[in-house]
Structures are given as C-alpha cells and as structure tokens.
Image (cartoon, rainbow, N blue to C red; front, side, top):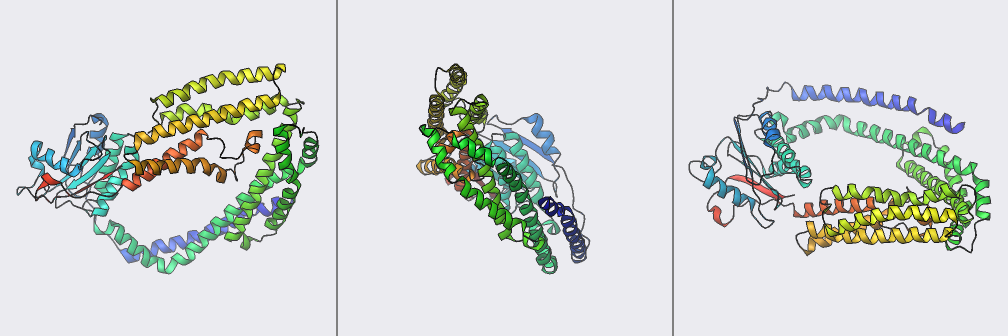
Length: 500
C-alpha cells in the first residue's frame, strides 16, 4: 500500500511543476514579444517556373510538380531540377554546369560566370549518390545553409525515395533562400539568448528536475511489478531449482545462475528499500534516477530468471507444462525467422542477392524442422536436451548466414576498404551491443541463460548494424564539394554538392 500511496501523488506533483513551468513560459513569451516587436510581413510566392530534367528517370512528375508548385518562396524564384546517373567519383557541380551550358544556357548569367538571377537548381545523382544545390547571386545562401538544404533530403534519398527527397530539399531551400532577417536562426537565437538570460536557468532547472522525477517514478513502478512477481514466486522458484537435473548441461548451467539468485534477490530488496525512502525532492536528482534504474534492472533480470528456472525444470523433467515451456524456447528463433523478409526489404537490404536467397531457404526449412522437433519431443523420440541442441545449432546457423549477408550488404554499399571496415565495425558493435541492451531486456529462455547474449546474431541486431553502418559511412562521406572541376574554367556560381 505504501508503494502505491507514494506513487499516487505523482499527478499532484506533476501538475504543480507543470503549472509553474507554464507561468514561466508565458512570461518568456511576453518578454520576447517586447524585445522583438512587430515584424514586417514576409512574402509567400510560389515558383515562377518549375523545370524538371529527369535524365536518371527516377522522379514521379505527377507527385513532384504539384508539390513544388505549392511551395512558397520569399521572392519570385525559378526552380530547376536535374537528375542524372553518374558514379561515386563524379563531381556533380561540374556535371550540372556542363549540362546547363549544353541544354539550358538561360540558367547561366549573361557574362557566363554565375548562375542566373532568380534561379534555384536542385540536382541529384541517384547512382553516384550525390545531391547538389545551386543559386543565382540574388538567391544565394551560405555554405552551411546549402548543407542544410541537402541534409533535409538525405534521409529520404538514402531510402531511395527520390521524389520525396527532392521535394524535401526544395522545401528547405524555400525556407532559407532570401529568408527575412527576423526569421533567421541567428536572430532567433540572439533574441532567445536575451530572453533566456532572465528565464533559462530557472526554466531548465525546473524541467530537468521534473523529467528526472517522472523518469525515476516510471522506473520504480516497472521495478515494483517485477519485484512483486519474484517475491510471490520465491518458494516455487526454490522448489523448481531443487528438481532440475544437474547431470544435464543445460540444467547445470541454469543451476549455477540460481546459486546467486537469493543473493541477488536480497540486493534487489535493499534497492527497493532505498528508492521507496526517497523524498519528492530527492527523486528529482540524477543519482536517484540511476538508483531506480538499478532496482528496475535487477528486478527484471530476477523475474526473467525465475521463469527460466521454471521452464528448465518443466522441460528437462517433462513435467506438467513442458509443452508451453518448449514453445517459449522456440519464441526468439521464430521471431528472427519472421523478421527476415522485412529485413531484406529494407533499403540496402540486398534482398535479391545469393546470401538473401540462402536466408529465405533457411527460414522455410527451419519452420518445417521446428514442427518435427516438437513432434519428436512429444513422442519421446528425442530428449529435451537433444531438442535444445537442435535449436542451438539452428540459431548458430542463422548467425553465420547473417554474417555472410552482412558481407554482401557491406560490399554493396561501401566504396572502398576504409568504408567497408567502418561498416564491419558497426555490425560487430550491433551484435556485441546486444549484451549491453540485455542488461535491461534479458532473453527469458534457457539458451539465452546458458550462452552469452552475443553468441547468437539476431535479425534486430543485424538491422541495427546495417542502419548504423550506413549512417556512419554517409557522415564520413559528407563533406561538401564547392568547385566546378577542370571544365568549369573561371565559373564561380554559388553552389555545392555532397554525398548521401
């Protein structure tokens, strides 16, 4: 009851803190209005013209044209979109200038040295994976802002959403080209700083304390639920452990974990006492949040382990409920198999490769084999330990197939050995990182208890590794190119390109 009373006051504390924060926010808004004063109205002008030169054949004009025509600029601006299929080694700036000179001389100023006034060009090379932005002298923005425009498109472009990525880049360009002074990031930051001198310290302190308090209460609630389950089942857990056969390889390892169970339970009890003694003020401290997380992690792992002890006893002794216990052992493997197709369908999933075909074949074969293992176990044709061995071997084979497919993905995306090594490192970190994540999400299975968490390479870990690897390589490629190459001559129009 004490626990619920302690947590039940959270709404009152939250409302009080939120009310204080709201009053402070109103004060800050009023002060900002006084400092900034009335601002002149900004123009909202659709493009004067939209020219699309989709030489790569990747854009959907039916979506692109209405979307771009509906974007408002601050000044009348002609928008040109150019795509072509190049290579990673190409200089997109040089290619855009070459194309303009050959096909659209009106994009270039009368003296041939700059881009024409009133022009904004968005360029894309989906094969070489470059994106570029170019402007007339009366529409140019800083190099940093050109990078912002390109960056606005990159997440979509990396996912091969060429049309949506182009629209996103043009929309960000419209927000930055000829942006009025009172809408600039620099002005807003300066104004915000001036107001913040008065209020930021108090406001930040209140918000941090409130977030920390809410986080601590959330962790305590999570911990209390798991701790109550463990406490209620404590005697049953001891009875289950007492009949696990230590002659079994799996049973003996689970029993080793059990030998520290009571000690860890006592530690969790001590943490429970500490967190429930915390006052409202103390709950707002980072040290209290860390303590609450320790309690939650300890309780979660105990709750998972007592389930594993029960399943080990039921399965190895073929006791009542052994079939449900076996289903729980299959569950992580089933989830991996179910996730293979979605993993291969993702951007950079290399779904048409030979290693992808091997994964699909393994999935289909394994789904049939699981049915046979279960039937053999039910009929007594194999022992529970043999069934666990077969499951272990299958998960090991899946891990090896995923590692082979990782090589395929890396070869498909990396342009050189340095990028391949960076992606490989991120894939390895994703697999090893499972150990860090599983301190808070322990796999409640016999194999998950017997083997280290990094022993099996799972589909979610693989997906995380690919995403992290692609992101890291893209960031490493990211520097802007501003020159127009050997054929550019003395041309010095405002523009740059970068990789995605």
